[in-house]
Image: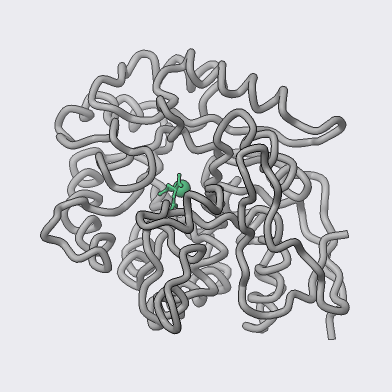
Length: 345
Ligand code: NCD
Ligand code: ZN
């Protein structure tokens, strides 16, 4: 039986760090294990221009614990007013790794997102030309579409048409939650990647709703039925380089989660690697963990894999805190619902 596994340091290809006191509290949780992360730009106000990204990058670097070896990969938030030249210059200088598309109103802090996709056509064409990845929050926002169907409908109505109209555009389907997402991602070429979160490999919609409502399992896209979770699990542990880790760790204070209108987001930065080792082991696929967490993402983003390694060791159940303290109040950590035996050295 394998008792330890050494892999290249992982990267998180979808992470929310927020700002101010929250940034200060959550950044060490990611920097402890991860070498790099794509930093989501949905601040209030959002990170829209290269200038905003440079300022946010400086605040992140200033908040890093002494001696941490962590690189934030910056993103721009796509609006209908985004300037293609600003985006291209920010990419060429190395400041910005990609652009994030939120359909307006799809999720937390997405009010400035896109409503009319024709308006962002010049930016998308520029990105296709320079090979800059577009990360998509793949849910439609139409009020007549059931929340559990919003990802599948997005693929047909938005994602596929945009890709057909913009040859060469490199797209990441972010935090896919459905078999539809898995099947679409698998059927496309190397210009399409898909991230999968830790929690969507572990929970289905019953975890949110059965036996009392569990606000800490509520995120967007919302977890779907078990057959979809199984499709995600199969994809993540298959070794297929289309799929890689984006935790979507999204901290909100308990006060904001445990409310009559609770925020969407699962905070999983602290125990993600332990959760993943447990999940991959249960599938007999520990040998595929490095690909998913450390190799497929850099390959898609055309970056070198990390040279340094981490070692996960199996032992007695690992204690982890129920929540982490922040100046704004506690933030509950993702509870996978089973003991975690794997710990990063
Ligand atoms: C994210 C957040 O809180 O910023 N929430 C979430 O449920 N995932 C936004 C997002 O990525 O959709
Ligand atoms: Zn997110």
